[in-house]
Length: 202
Image: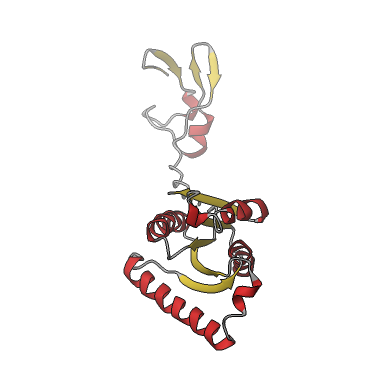
């Protein structure tokens, strides 16, 4: 039996065709041979469409972010925190905020304060920190706060190691007169940190 399909000659073995020469089933279908343009090929058998593969999950760069702010510079604190929040949301990462009360590296300064006075300074700063966070942090944003007293860069590094942060976000002060004592902190954190460091320019 010969028939024309799309301009090509198709030959079906008559002993495998049904009485009407119209349909083939089961093994008879596989036994049919198509002669197309001088080549012998098996007929195409429709296959069910495969289910689409689920999208691959992209591995996040950061899991724990530490942001160090200076409450005495609210403009810088807001800018640095904004960058840290974006990183946390993009990576679904935990956000930790630290405020370091500096001692300026001068041990004799601490001799002017008793242990109770030092504790009160830290408690007052923590209350101020919590008040700032309630006003400035976006609703629904999870975070935790830490207040420590001592060398700024050293406490930032220690806190980052303690909480297992894999990135640190902090600001870089302009080299104005009042910033000379604190200015080197960003450079020291960048130099000595085990983590990646984002320095936010004001």
